[in-house]
Image (cartoon, rainbow, N blue to C red; front, side, top):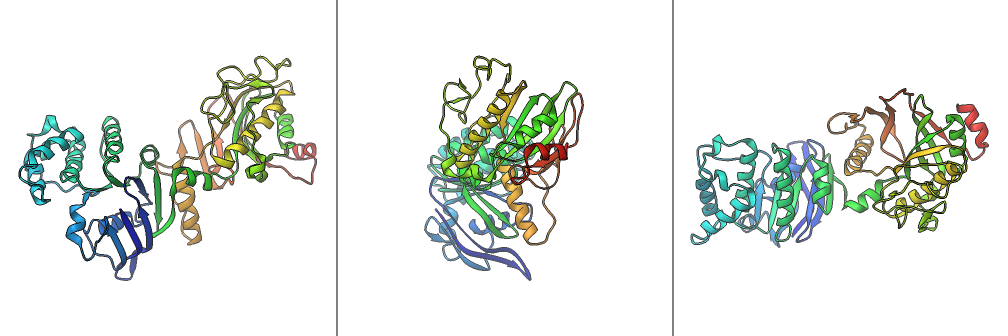
Length: 437
């Protein structure tokens, strides 16, 4: 549907799009992501025939954008970031006017207006003046305009901008329904929307494509080492020593300790966990069947872990972790089994053992951050600031097995600053723990 080859766009000495190449197949929903100023909108405007390219080739539905611009425009529905509407026209008048401009036959205009009004939830405002509508309804009118001629390709630049949560959900469902009949290129800063809607992601930064793959492959490529969060009740120094003694553990980070001796640890697995031969498809941990299937499934822990087979009161877990992907999933399963078995043999309690998944936001931040660092520029910040709900603040560096930065957790009975401890293969675990505690 879309073929972009060595696309370049320059404004004087400034290169907005630099040798970009990608493909979008028919029926795909593709998220087109990037920081502000990365070249997203410029690329989309070139695809829509709105502005010319400086160099390269762009084809849409087999037509060259530079030589067959009108043929391309007939097959594209374009919703720009700044929705251009005639504020003094009524919704029905505007849609009829746009349908005529886009070549919809006179006998089909009423039917197409009815269809797009229903799709975009505009029936209740069809006779109202556009300028009196809320921003959310005006965004819907723009989407209806993009759909009025039933195009093969939809190019949507921030389609949920200004919508309330209910409207966003409606637009998300609409995009999924439209994907059965249209190819969709979607640009948005709401990355959770991309995760729920798109099958493929293209990330652009400084005018260049820096990542292009399916969501699953992107997560697997950038997921790093298996990363668990465990909450264990017992003497923290002994717990730390025991965790560092495990062959599959590379690093242990103490995130917090409470007055009642609960220690929260972030445990990073060793690199050998990602090797295929370390996969473990077992159906139980320590002899206790968890969730009826396997660790790494969608739901683990209907019963208390250790509730039946742990006679020494070692572990009473209230939650396990959701499944991972590929080698990271297998490595996470092996790491979880090792941590669980270690706790089970000690007079401790375990109430949480959770595999930390990387979201698209985490992948986006790390990919763009690395690209900016290579260019010697300031690191981009996480959308919405660096403070996460729940009192967790992340600063500095990159954790090779987890999310960017180190963590200091606030709240609770008492708090300690995050302490990171690395396993040293040349030093006995007891000496490591003694030196660092």
